[in-house]
Length: 167
Ligand SMILES: CC(C)(COP(=O)(O)OP(=O)(O)OC[C@H]1O[C@@H](n2cnc3c(N)ncnc32)[C@H](O)[C@@H]1OP(=O)(O)O)[C@@H](O)C(=O)NCCC(=O)NCCS
Image 1 (cartoon, rainbow, N blue to C red):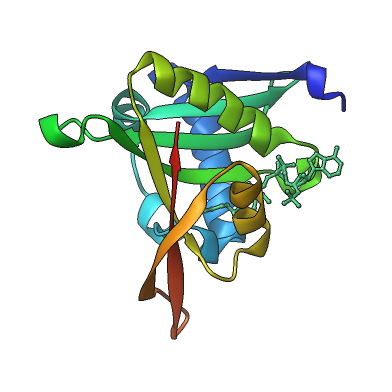
Image 2 (tube, rainbow, N blue to C red):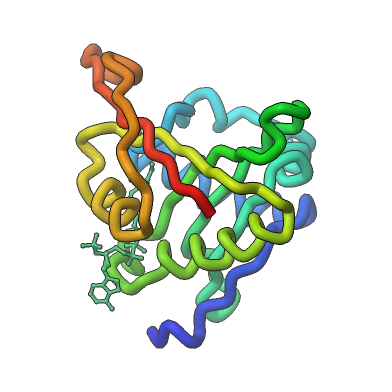
């Protein structure tokens, strides 16, 4: 796979089936990476998926028309927070990891944030997601705090870092 073959685009509500497939796969295989749970999302109907694609800005990375990576931006529409946004749902298919896909997704997103006049983005990451944390640090995010026992899964509480980056 050549990096130059990767196309990133903002997904449209019509892309809901492909988005649903990769999103559910990520929740199933990486339960500690996401606040949402597979069992919560598996029964969403097509209008739920379409609404999310309309409300959020969801970037998809494609290799030869196959959706291989996702990154979602949740804008804050309230007046005093409109310069901020949260990043959620970052995921790259295991077969495509360590090839720069996540960094390509973020590069496209940063460009879009500037156009939307968003100055600061934040995210939360479970402390055990080492690959994600090192990728975010390499992208210029800083750890600005920790939420203790924020995520509960299979009887265990996990701490999560707050990370931020000014665009
Ligand atoms: C975290 C995740 C999104 C990273 O995706 P990715 O596409 O592998 O990330 P990239 O390839 O852009 O960068 C990851 C690392 O690969 C390195 N890399 C990039 N291109 C490379 C290449 N051609 N050869 C070798 N290494 C490379 C990067 O330098 C980076 O290393 P670093 O962490 O030491 O800086 C992915 O591992 C994933 O989906 N994890 C599971 C879900 C998850 O944790 N999501 C985050 C929720 S907060």
